[in-house]
Structure formats: C-alpha cells, structure tokens
Image: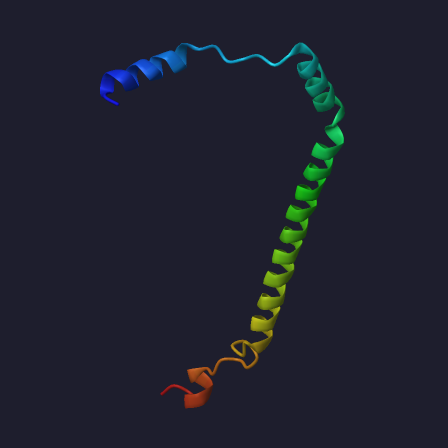
Length: 91
C-alpha cells in the first residue's frame, strides 16, 4: 500500500456518514437513560461517602500522630535555666 492508496482510504472513511441507530433502539436507550438515575445516585453517594471517610481518617491519623509527638516532647516540661540565677548577682 502506498501513500495514495492510504490517502484514498482515509478520505473515503472520513466521508462515510455514520450509521444511525434505529428509531426504536434510540427511544429505548433514551428511556433507560432517563429512568436509570438510581445507579448514578448510588455511585455519587458512594464516592461522597468514600471521600468523607477518607478525610475523617486522615484528620484522625494526623491528630493521633500530633498527640503522640507532643506527648513525647520534653522541651516545655522543665523551665529553661536562666544565667542570672545560676551566676548570682552581677558585679
């Protein structure tokens, strides 16, 4: 197959009109799309709950990690030593 044959085939394929669905089939498909809103609502609800639960789990995990790290931190448990009290009165 050369370039001319390929070009001819592509032009011919582009010019062919797509076959339309039979009217009876189109009506049944559109009727099903109109009435099958329940599946979309269930999926939407599932995805929303999944996102909500993932957010709650992330916040709970971050809180637990923060609490654990804060409870192990000893920086603020003892007051800092002050040079004034350690050295005595200045001369």
